[in-house]
Length: 193
Image 1 (spheres, rainbow, N blue to C red):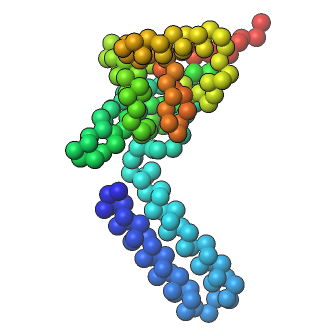
Image 2 (image 1 turned 180 degrees about the vertical axis):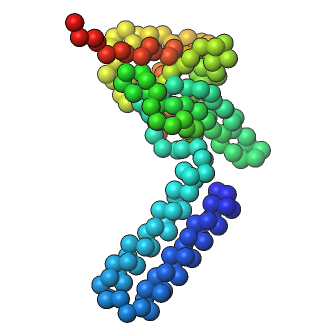
Image 3 (image 1 turned 90 degrees about the horizontal axis):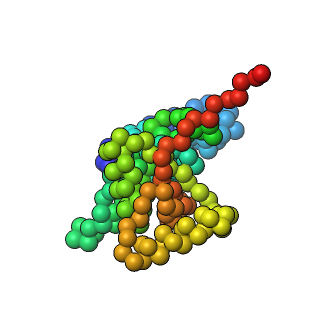
């Protein structure tokens, strides 16, 4: 955590405490002073956690269900520096009709060699001028037989030394299952006849 974030949170806390002290010394009815104090103190903690969002730090929140991947950066784990590694995805959410919605955002995933290999393949597709979409799936048990068989075959190939590829479903801890593939065409509404 950056010293800037900590110092901004402390400064905000100082201002809130100063206002609360002024409230305690004023002649405002006691119930209003207590209510103001009880509402003001939690904002110190809320501010501390939300300043990162304002600065544009990578989100560690849940990924959107469907998104367009613009680029990614993979930080390998480093035992010498004792860093666990991370995967950063720059993406934009897509709605159910495959249209971009919301703001571009960077998400941070914990490092996994399987996910890193799939993300590298997705970056290669982007370098070749293709648009890449990602999908976050909640449950692998609901797969149909064809998907289940293709996943088993991909896992068998990976065990034989082949790399993970774009289009495979890869389990990401704490996030669910991610699948990268070609960007789907937008769904256009039907025209009345």
